Length: 443
Image (cartoon, rainbow, N blue to C red; front, side, top):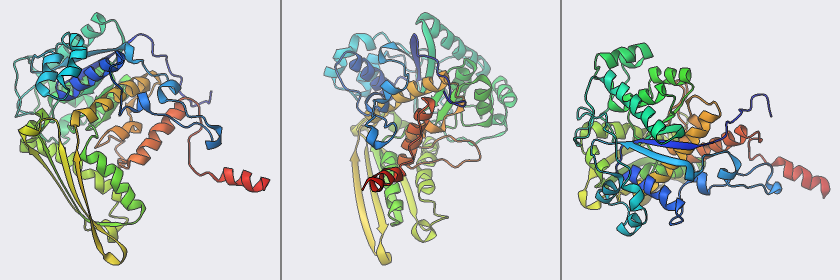
């Protein structure tokens, strides 16, 4: 074992997966995992379950499945818990959300009906389009302590060896970092004083970190991306990461934009609009919540295209994003893009994309992978921001001095090289000169 190679504790016992938000994403994830465990479905979209990883030279033919290469928790060892302001159990919530067909839900209805949400930390000051009676009462400090008690009780009652928390709840109103976020002392004073700068998602993240539970943020909320919680995570040796699951339209941008840049094709405009009718769409119909999502979506092209380095190609790019709540569409989101491309000698071209996607179907495997990889990170002693998992997020968290890497192909290389490093294998550079040195030596 190399001197700096981490020693990974084995994934013994049960892994509890705690989910703030028991809506479309969470119920699709839980139902899907149970369907896979019963042999009633395939975990399509999950890198941990279906992805392979190359080890060594191409000529070595070593391409194991990722789940056979690194010590991940087994799907049979996962136990699920959730919080939600709406008291419906996971089966009723899944039926209401309408993502999965009734025939698929019937396969796992006995399992889903047993998962009932704990009372949530929730306030309409931060999510104005939702409401529900299953809500905790008290000061923000008291709410944090109630969450910590929930976490301890869940772990004890379900006999879990370890826990991980993945935020699957709604987008909150836009917040900027302020004085209350700058240190853990200021943050805890803010909890005591009910500071409005502390949103519910921050209380979940704080409670998780205090209980040494890894926390991944699936929404664009500020949440754990503040100095106070960065420092607390390092102090408590807890992995954190986010923000915002990379699912539909932004997924396409992180695939296409690197291709345009690789070929040095210019862009003059990229107009994106979405229509969706699920709970997420209803929440984003509020301008303050949309502002949070917009910030997450708009930053992607800026970082990929680097207009400061390529002003002739991208310096005048007009990038517009719109989200429209349209109830008839439900969870079947439509992402429409018009891309104005500039080619040789400045000649214009256009690309149109109409992605008829299923938001929660794309998000569910991300939740699974994050739960398993964040658990792996903690067992490997990797604390603080897990930038190597940027592959899964629209707005990846990084160290303060770093810009986020949005190119999905670079993100995947970083993720797989981190796994190689964890297991003592050499990183893959794709240089490849050694093959030709050997070839020409033998010719």
